[in-house]
Image 1 (cartoon, rainbow, N blue to C red):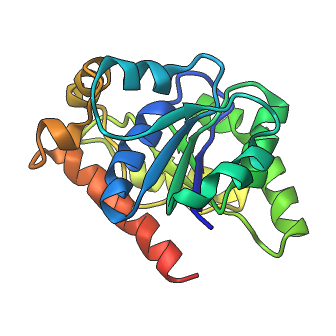
Image 2: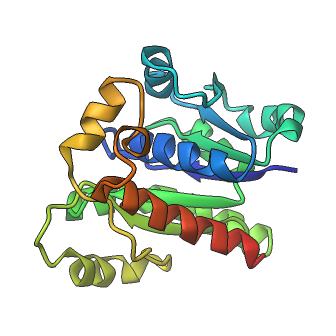
Length: 211
């Protein structure tokens, strides 16, 4: 069975597609990886069509996502879901399908508040399935040289989910990579952006090794 990671946030423009693409691209170095575009907008599919990443991308923007993945997932070690926005049934299906959920959140109270319904769904699922899936917040699109880590850690305390220490900063290289259908790792493997993704990927791998 594949390891399934869902990148979910009900708020549009949260940076989840960029995070899902880069995480999936990194994970393909650790086993056969599939990126699932579960958003009807199809941004991950558009990214795939714009370039030649070598990463397989399929669209599954139906609330039967969790059941359909069971049928097609056997050929993959890793599946990364780019989750839907504002579609309750799709979000719930993504939660059911996942072994791990990453919630990208920009360093803004408004963005954090928008995640409250998603956290409720995750925690209800955890209570019914002995703590699965694991879930954590990831700060994305942060400005450099700001004291966001301590502020965000304090802000998420009331949600009962951890905040990963690996911040994804607001860098033009991410925007360029998505526009060109590639990734920051492929464009410049020695860049700070590529290192951010590498650190986050290592944390994900460690979490699955510990299961």
